[in-house]
Image 1 (cartoon, rainbow, N blue to C red):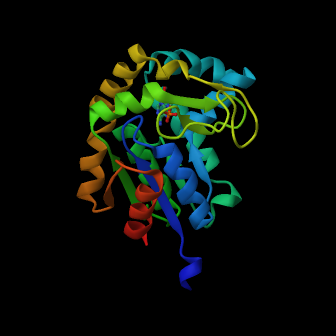
Image 2: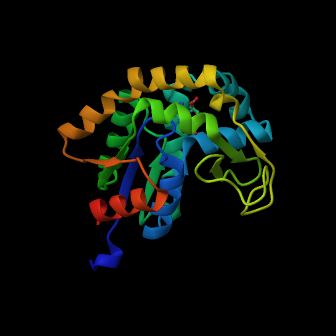
Length: 220
Ligand code: AMP
């Protein structure tokens, strides 16, 4: 297998607001693998008013996690698709130990274990600041930050011209809950992946391009 054929089955881990989505888009593009964001899948389903969207809405609105069985079924289906043959980058999944165990089992059964878990670290105060300043495109999902990455025209997406909005779960009350949910349910995954030596800790502080450079150097 040549270097360019190297497969990459990766996970982007980190608290809400660490920049997972922004970095995941760039990393997936760099390594020509699909970017699979469970949050994006749920938001799209809510927007379309599907059965999944109806099930997920109450959890997203309150900052709670969608039940494991719902999420794992979606991811299991998605990663079976042909475009995932060269690898993938999961963003926002897994978020609990049972989800991580299901993922490991699926990948082991397919003979393609995770190659890296990128753990983006940012301190809590900075996370709250970033999340309250985040704006998202209602059409393409692109993220902006009114402080550090403002759109060229206020309220309008640079990429597609869509209208920018503040996600309900980026409002202050919900942010505190999302951070607690992360600490209680997702942070234990750091130790889980550390034990199997798949964890790559990357500081998510600083400019987007600097963080991206750190990730690329670390995953090769
Ligand atoms: P995100 O865009 O990754 O911040 O996800 C937004 C919301 O979607 C979360 O606060 C959860 O309600 C839901 N969600 C996304 N991924 C998962 C997951 N792996 N497990 C459970 N809930 C999830």
